[in-house]
Length: 462
Image (cartoon, rainbow, N blue to C red; front, top):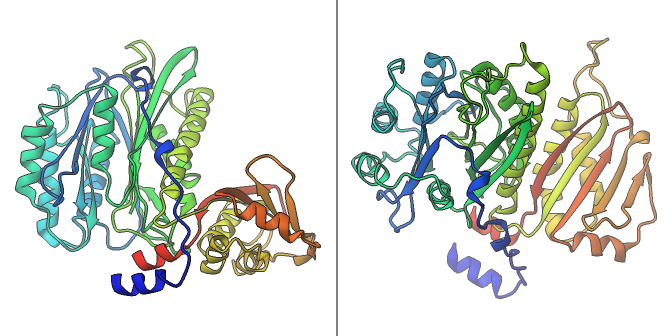
C-alpha cells in the first residue's frame, strides 16, 4: 500500500493537512477543578516511549458522582462491560478512571475481562481510603488495536509504581493524562474553564482522543445498539468540582453527548470501545451546598446541563479538527425540521456521505450531493399520525456560510436553484473552515454536526 501511495502521490497534487499546533497550549491551573490528582505514564503498551497509561483520582471528601455514555456496538469491549457493571452496581458513584492506549482490549474473551478488572483493582488501591466505599470505584477505558490481549503485567506495574509516584494537580499532570489517551492523534486534546451556578464558582476540565474511526453513537450504561446510520474509537472524560447528583449527572451527560460527541464524523465507522465518562466531586462547593438535582433544583440543573453541553461540544470538535488526513472543518446545520431527531439524522447523513466529503476536499460547491443525502433519510411520523413525514422539495434551501462573517452564499432557495457565483463559491470552499446550512421548511427544530473532508491521505490510511 505504501508503494502504491508513493506512485499515486507522484502524479497527483495532495494538499497538506492544516497545522494543528494552535489547538493545544498551556492552561492556567486556576481553570482546573479542585479535588483531582492525575497523571500519564509510559507502561510499555506502545512500542515507542509515548505515554500509554493514564490515572485520574478524585480526592474530594464529598461523594463523587459518575456518569458515562458507552458505545452501542454489539461487540462491546471488556472495559466497556466492566465500567458499565461498576456504574450500575454503585448507583452512579465512582472516584477513579484508568485508561490505556495502544491496545483496545476488545474481542479478547474472558482474559480481556480479567485484565480490565485487574486494572480496576490496581487503581482502586491508589484511592484515598473511605469507610463507606463500594468494592470497586474505578472506571476503565482502553483504545488501540482490536483482538489483542493487554500486556497486563506492564500496565499493572505502570499503575502501582509509575503512576502512584507521579500524580499531580498542575497543568503538566493534566497534560500527561491527556497524552496517555492518544493513539493516532497529533496533539493532546485538553480543555478547561470556569462557570458559576448560584453565585458559586466551579471548574470543568476534560480530555478526549480520536482522529480515525470517528462517528460515535453512545448511550447511558446498559443500553444496546439501536438501528441508526453508521457510527464510531473515541474516549474522553469530563471532570468538574461542582456537586451534581448521580441521576442528574447522567441525564445531563446523555443530553450533552447527543449534541456533541454523537454529532461528529470523520469516517463514519463505529468502535467497540467508545466511552465518555463524567465525574462530579463537589470539591468546590463545601459541605453545606446540596447536590444539584433536576427535580429539586431544576434552575441550577439547567445551567449545569448547558455548561456541560457547550464544553462537550468544544472537546468533540477537537476530534474532527484532528481527523486523519482532513483539510477542512465543516459545520453542518439542519434547520426547520419537525424534530431534533430528524434534523440530527439528516445532518449525520450529509456528514458521512462520501460524495459530499470528497466534494469538500475538491472544493467543489456540488450542492446536489448535499440535497441527495438530505432526501435519502426517512423521517419520523408526526405526533398526530402514524404516517412518516415527507420532505417537500419546494421548501428546502441550501447555503454555504463562510467562517469570516462575510455574506453567505445561497445555492438553493425554496427548491429553486440560484445562479451561483462560481468564483465566490470556490473562495468559500477553499477555506479551512466553513458552514453548510440546510433549511427544510417543515418545523422549528434544528441540529448541528461537525465533519471533515475525505482526502487522498484519508483513503490510503484506511
